[in-house]
Amino acid sequence: MLRRGDWNHYRYTYAEGREAEVAFDVQAAFLPASDRWPHGLRVLLEAEDTEERVLQALDALDALLVGRLRYAGRLELVLQVVDPALVAAVPGASVEHTPGWDYFQDRVSPSPVDWRRIEDRETVERLGLAADQRVRAIHRFFGDPPALRDVRERLLPEGFEFERDEGRHLAMAHVQPVEHISIITVGLLRLCEQSGVAYEGWNP
Image (cartoon, rainbow, N blue to C red; front, side):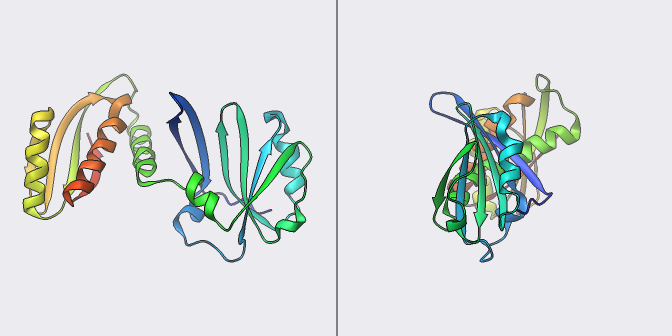
């Protein structure tokens, strides 16, 4: 089993506040589905302390490890395999075959909102910001001037301050606790989708 080195992770909330954590192979998320491993495989561990033993059992398999999910007290490994018939049972886990790359694309690969949260987390980590500190974030937008003017007018009553307008580029400032930054950016992402402009991220 191949385990590539470039991975990332994100979290999301489901079912009345329960949290799931997803780690994923970045190359698999960015590139088109590979014909080399055409079949999906879910491996649901019976206990978290069996992970290394399960991985060892899968090691000889012609497969690619593409995801690792933790939710509701469970741990799940997601693989793409050449021949699903070779995986009938795994000691310490139950297995479920899934068609093509569907499960990875639907449940593991990040959505645009997940990517936004990943970028926010990486920006916070790079800048060394504490979760409870307040930051004045400069949010950047790109698009046609009339659409950007609409975004500007919609944000001003929401506590945003005009920073600069450079034709097809707009910058607006907003102050919030670092721990709430993704609440703001996800809302901006959705506003931009409605307005036909691109949200380019933020910096202090």
